[in-house]
Structure formats: structure tokens, C-alpha cells
Length: 630
Image (cartoon, rainbow, N blue to C red; front, side, top):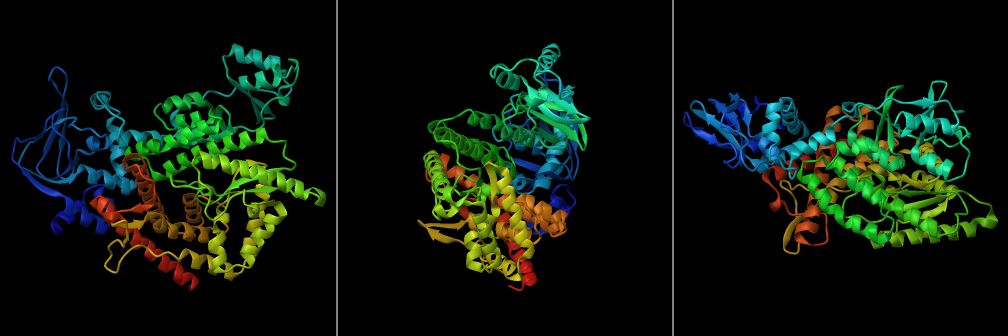
């Protein structure tokens, strides 16, 4: 066994695995001895049940074309791995014929355990996707691999979709016009050059965007003359995104902006623009198409139907190995679109609002980390009004909030048991009242108060006047700057409230529920959320998403590189398992989704990864205890 562990330490990417994990993986592997000339796999006939690490000897692998002519012969020497592409592409049959050229010894790892390792360790997984990408540069290889391909359970296809950069698509060159250009000239240029949009440029700076849709709505339908200057109808806000952003990030930005184009930049330089349609064609099988369909739904029944389809969508993403961080963002984007449609619908059925306002969300929704077990966490901030109008304003927004919450509950977002909703009079208030709330929570804090109101430090703007929300956030930062050590102590105490679910002998601690032995995966994640929130507030990192908080903390040297990597791995691994569990409850067990997991139903890799994660969380909590003397 020790010899096999020592050998695997020399094999990439097994050398990237933690030492204890590598030992557990080695114990799962089966040693096989093959005689010279043994046919290991036959193209399109042999089942692929494992991946093989060559210890001694050699594999010869090749394709045969329709004329039985041998193509693309490859040799696999000691330290090479065969079968990874077939497993990740979810090929049921071998894509090549493989023969042991000499007496050969291999270590075989079950295909499902291998895929579990890929889900558990990103660096391990990306070794194989990069290797596959290089091979796919060969058109002949790509021809054989793509034949009879399936997207179901296809890890590599998913990885290529969600790791592709915007820079891989050539943007269309910007066509600009001065602000005083008459709209009839703009329209003529767009027709002549077959453009769907133009940009307004003033003294070398892009000031706005004009599209066919804007020309129709703001000029033709509004009855304005063709001589009106383009600056009067152009949209001043437009989407810009760096060329190194991922394709799915660009699409999310477009969906959230209600525009059809994104301007691509490289620092201060504008490279051009890309349309939503072009991005969607790059994501032909993408869930982002589903998000667009949500935007087109405008009744409670339609939105309810869309939400009921989300578990199947998420299940497919997880089966294809999409990272939980990306899945979280997709779920949150869908939820945001549903919420926006609900707010717009209620707004249209009520009289105009008597004051400016901002609708915000908190908790997991505020952190953009929603799962399929979710309730409502929201609040309303409205501008301060003269005394004689206070009751009138308050009555309006409470009615507004109640209608929104009722519709959300009907769609499938249940009422919050703790009452943290805008329909609760406690959480719909004027800006000055909200400032008083944060002032009290920060400066008069006790651990019980911090536990109760910590969700409000994960708030995020969704709708209305963003200036009101920004002013409140700025005030919160100001209060944090004046906070006492008592507040930080209370935050730390709260973050250490939940202990990792490990026994003294490093096995997973469970409890009984309906004759099952289970653990609560949400509670397993809570220490990470709370610790990262505490560190972010202490260092005035104004992010709400846990992953982005970690990134900013690492960039500010408040987390070491090792702590950052371990925290990211731990959090999103647990999140992926949580989402998988919930989709399984809904789609296969036909029960209400929950956060309870039975360890006995997990693979060996999943169990050992959980133990590693819980040990890390325990060690990290110890570090925080020493720092804050809790």
C-alpha cells in the first residue's frame, strides 16, 4: 500500500490531492495485472467502468474508422492515465480500442468515484479538461469523440461552457455618433450598415447607446420628429464587461440590465460590442436561455410554473459537473427575475408610490447563494417624508409589501418563519429609521442580537432607487468604523456557535430522524458563512456573497492563500452536495426538499472529502478563537 501511495504522489493530478485523501483513494483502487497482447477495451463495445493508472508496462490506444482503418494511435506509459475522457464525457462504451502492449500493471479507480473526485477537487478536475481541450485541437480526434456524444452527465462539455472567456469571441466594432446627431441620421446609418445599435460618443468617451428598440419606443411611438438630437433619447446606462469575464457572466449582466448588448473592454480601451443573441447561440444548451424565458413570464401562474421547473434544470447542471458557485448564481438570477416580475406586476396594479424607495433582499438571497429550500427575506427602505405624510407613506408600502409577499408565497417562496419580510411592519421603514437600526445593532450589540439580525448584514439591492440603498450601506460602513471590540467579539461568538459535525474519532456525527442517521448540511456550512461575514465586517469588506468576500479578504491579506483556497473548496463542495440532495428529494424521492443528508448514501470519496472539510473548519475556528480570545 505504501508503495502505491508513493507511486501516486508522482502521478499528475493525483499529486494535487491532500495526503489523507490520497491514501483513501489508493485503498479504493484495484490492482490489475494484464498479459502482453490483452485487449483491455474494444471501441464502441466495451463498457467503461473505471479509469486506469499505468504502473508498469504500456497501453496502446487507437481509433478505427468506418473502414476499419487504424487512426491516431497513442501510447500510455507508466504514470499515464487512461479512461478519464470517457468517464467525464459520460461515454458508456470505450471511445477507443486499447491493448496492453507488454505485461502491464494498472491501478483502476471506479468511474463514479473518479467523477466524485472531480467534483471535489477543482485542480484535479481541470487537469483533465485542459488535457482534453488540447486533444480536441486535432480535428480528426474531435471527429471521433463528438460522434454519438451526449450532454447528459457530460462534465467536460459543461466545463468548456462555464469556463470560456469573452475574449474567445470577436466583438463587433463600435459605430459611434456625436450627441447632437439627429435621430433620422442615426437611423439611416443603422440601416445602411445593418446595425442593431450605435453608441453616442462625446470627446472620446462613450456616453450612451441607441438601439432599434429605443428608436421605435422613444421616437416613433412618442411622435418625436426625426430632427431630435440622439442624446435626448439614447440610454445613458449600458453594460460594460472586461474581455476576461466568462461568457455566462456576460449573459447574466445583460439579463439583469434589460439591454440586448454588452460593450467589451480591456482596461480603459473599448474593444467593441456583442449582442445577447450571439452570446445565446454560444450557449445553445445553456440554462441562460431558461432565464430569458422567465423574463417573458408576467403572471403569477406562469412564474410558478417556471419555478417548478428549476429543480430539473439544476439537477442537469450538477450531473454535468458545473461548479456549485455558478449554480448558485443561476438559481439566484432566476429568483431575482421572478422577484422583479412580481414587483413590477404589483407596482402596475397600485397607484404611484408616494415616495422613492428601495427593495432589498437579505440572508442567502442577499448573498446570492440560494438553494431550492428557500423562503422570503426582504425589506423596504423609503425616503423620509414630512410628518403629515408619514402614515400615508407607511400604509402604502406595507400594502405594497404584503401583495409582493403573497404572490411570492403562491409561486413557491414561502413566508419567512422568523418574519424577516417587508410585509412585517418591523422591516419596512424610512431611511433614517433603518440607519437607527444598524447603529443600534453595531454599537449596542450582544451575541443574541447579532445572531438575530446578522441576516441584515447580507443585504443586497434589487429594485427601486439604488441611491437610498447605497446611502444606508455607506452609513453601515461608517458605523463599523466606529464599532467597539464588543461588536467583533459578538460576531466571533456567533461564528463559533456551530461546531463541525465530527466525532472524537473523526467520523461524521449524525442524529436520528425517521429511523435514518443524518446530518444537517446547512448547519455544516453555517460556520463558514458566519466566519467569513465576521472577517469581512471587521475589515470593512463591503461584499455580501461569501465567495467574493473570501476573494476580497485574500486580496487584502486578511486570509492566507491556503485559507482562501481551503475555504472556497469547503464551502462550494458543501453547497454542491446540498443542491444535489435537494434536487434528489424533489425529482426522485418526491418529498419536500430538506438539508438532511444520510452519509451512508454518499460515495466513499464524498465521505472522506466531508471529513477533510470538517477537520479544516474545526482548525479554522480554533484560529479565530485564539485571535479573538473567545
